[in-house]
Length: 304
Length: 206
Image (cartoon, rainbow over all chains, first blue to last red; front, side, top):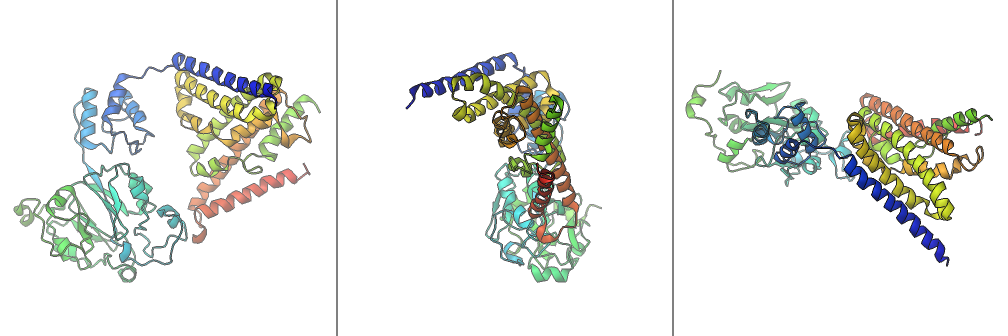
């Protein structure tokens, strides 16, 4: 064996390595960029999840954008009110007032819905949605392969026994990552609603109600019973689908009780604190009693 | 063949005839990974052109001035090139951050990714061991030849990537049969595009 060759190789590689190390260490001092210390402060106030909901690739670039003034102090969607106030305090601005939103799922399908074929591929909603439009018969429903669960930067989602993602509202920050990740997010399967919105319609299909009943037992059948019972004109059947107007909803819970399909469900931070269920999908909630979140007179004298 | 004709042929040959993506199937990971939006493709193409030319200039110098005189070039060039390219990209990143923030923002996040891109290593290797041009060109590239060759490879990468991105953006809204929507259609499109490039190569029996 030629020892000289081995020696030469070692010398050549370590020489190049040493040269590179010298060059880089000089460069790191020579080209050092002074970072505004307010950026460091703002960065430590941000959640640090790098979720990208603000439009920046990382919390660091978000901090830079906020300090340089290209984005407002409320830029951090995920952080909400607390973070906005902390950031505003650091930059010497008045604390802003924010409407806090959380994510809800407009589907109660899962094991209650039929599938067109047995899928045995990648465990991903995006993958299944690209295969002949997906295995779910419903064109708007949840596939239940958990892309949103894996994408959630705050660990707020889990798949339950029905194969549907359940959102833990204590952890949900309304960062919109799940909506962006969901292949059906753009057609309204996942939506951001005010954090105290009390009810959610667990269906987003716009098919004929007859077709819908054939492929899912939990669907909205556009019967308009909720619309008629609502004292505050907050729920309407639009384009064959019940839709809640959260600016009018008074959280009386009557639509939940009257729905024959049990597809209207309780949600919202306040409402869930009162009701002893989290994402029960209505069908599981036996003997549901109307919520008493707001004063009773508010129900008798509805907001017009 | 005059010097200029040779250079022009080298550039076109590297960019189109022996296209790194669609004729030689190197760096397909980034080809499918980032070709779903025009914005990222443009950033990536610019960064690849920039890094590739710099990297292969540096590796050419290291190969002919360090490795070859020591007699270790034949077997040590790959680890040495990886080292040189990684260090160089880091250095360029720091330099850009200090002196050209606009350029840094445009291709900042792609620079570290490109460090490990196989196309960059392939171009650097080819510029000292030009296997594909053995028949028509002198075996050893001079420094200007190496630079022009790498520029051609990088331009070919950018051209193929951008044309494929444009196709994929059209395909997203095209009435594709449902069973082919998404990834299958992209593979078919890439295959057809590749046929065109390979056909260019065998057109005149090159």
